[in-house]
Length: 178
Image 1 (tube, rainbow, N blue to C red):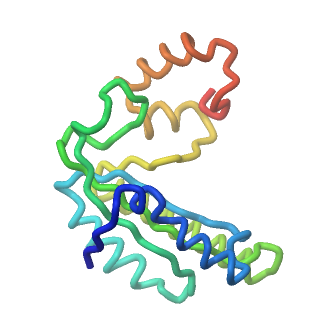
Image 2 (image 1 turned 90 degrees about the horizontal axis):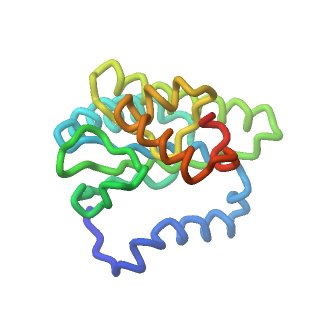
């Protein structure tokens, strides 16, 4: 469906969901969200494999939440930003799979959280296997190799390292990127 909202409404689009979850006592639980940037040319392949495949096949988790899909124009982004986008297509898509678990203090909660995290990994593996050049927004990599090869890529990594040395010489910001 299509929903027209004001610019401010768009920027605050997740807040309504947060308020509903807070009212139900479900906000302070794990949120294994997966946010990706996908090239326009592959978004339909992603939809078939993920929305009609992985998520539909394993809908038994019971974990619900909004799924946001919307196009972005590359020319609206500052080319000097450190944000990383897939390929060089003019239009790319942001896909947010925003699910909530249940409290991880119970066995059921830990199992559900583990399953949702595994499902996120399965989605990323699917993209890799299908050659869909997705970029995870706000990822976590435990080593430099992950940041360098999976997130930034060789060309953007060199620029990132240069800026990191210039603007964060004591390496106090984003320490996990080494």
